[in-house]
Image (cartoon, rainbow, N blue to C red):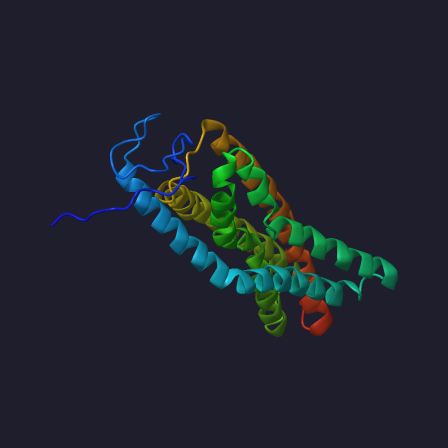
Length: 245
């Protein structure tokens, strides 16, 4: 026996063109020809996705707050041994924290969603928020560099060679992070938007990559300086051990 569907409620908009499909049971959108039966699947997928977003919101916000805070605190602990002006150090800490926080916030999702019809902007912001993890990748090289410098000190490594290797780690990690961005983040994001029935105009792709590039540049530059901060922190915690020719 075929399943009998109730008419779509008034205000149910076509994902493709925004036409009000209220009252329709089957068939196609009178405006663009979109299959009405797929509307129910899209609405179900959106409800499930929004539930998932709501359930993980606290953890995502806490993570995006704690990572910049830990990053700034590690820098200050090392930098205070190099800078005598404590006010300058505190200003740098606040600046780094706010800078990283802005890069990791949902501001980027708000910007790219402006390219989408108003009915789908919330969905776009949710997709952006759920895939925000990729912007953490560049500066994860900083704790890796710190561990390297700490081990190098205990082994009495030559300081110049250690610094060169530290920045080489940054370059290798950056290439790998870009690979994840292109191979995982991009198809995953676009696949979710398609599954959720979001009509994506051509300019959305352009704006998205502009915003992603700006955030990626900001986090990457911060991670670059993070190599130096890792060295300062290792210098503060392990004051002896370098072999200097």
